[in-house]
Image (cartoon, rainbow, N blue to C red; front, side, top):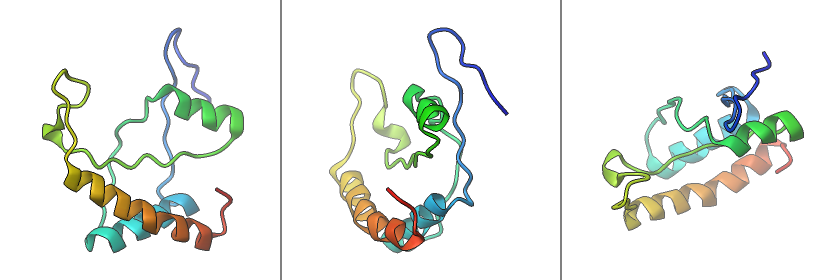
Length: 105
């Protein structure tokens, strides 16, 4: 389905959780947190992401580590060092998982 972006905006983006990249990310999340990841649909309106898909024909992993009380996009936005460290741990595990999946990065 082709979605035409509205003027000054962007079309939505949705990636299959069954893709090789998503499965690699899920494995890295399990290894990093010791729990089953929760998949939610959020953040898919970032303009460049839908353009990556339509122009470059490549998917983008959107993995968030912010918490609801981080007050994203507000004057007092914050992000804890603990969340940063967890995100870093995930990233260190993601690259080997992507390489093992056989997908080009």
